[in-house]
Image (tube, rainbow, N blue to C red):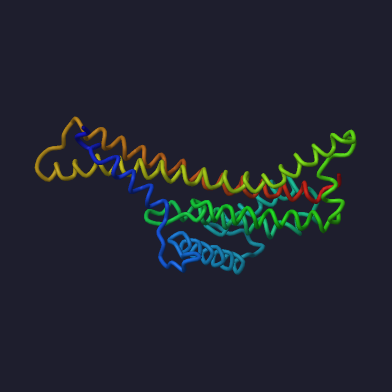
Length: 270
């Protein structure tokens, strides 16, 4: 039977997983408004407010602070994702507004999730799936608009494949097309959900070790046996937060990059 600081660990982990599952605020029977829904709306408001503030402060004179950081991020995404993937200026000008919206929404949702007590909308599969479906519709729409419906469907199979075999290749490519929904949604959800579990677990362990030391310090000197462990867990928690901060940027970038790749594949000449 467990004893010491780790005695209640399993119970706290169960509470963490239940909390990450979200909670219904209003149940309509056919659906519900959950805590994730509320934080999703908060992220949307924050992102639009941020865009409005930055847009109102844009000038030819270089600025410092958050505005400069956002402008640098926009320039980097435009260069690496826009010109790096889409290629020519016409495609960049056409698709970057959508890609910027995707990037800053995912980034905002990821960052909000690092606030204790908040929920990351990207930490629930329904949100990442919906976002992936929006991107799926977007790049297929422009692919069909570029080539025409019949040519777009026909070009799923590369030219030069032997008759008979080309049908099998076409079916594989069609399946691959729909699997892009999975690659977008599952990758983002899995990374963010796993990150929240890890941070939550480290936060629980830090709490289980720190609180007994705080209580003990009020009665006498700290125990040399558990005090180092308490400090170690706290340092690990800080390190995990720093790592997760890096992950939220990477995941927003990867999601946007993959979307740009799919747009380029859909609108390119075959």
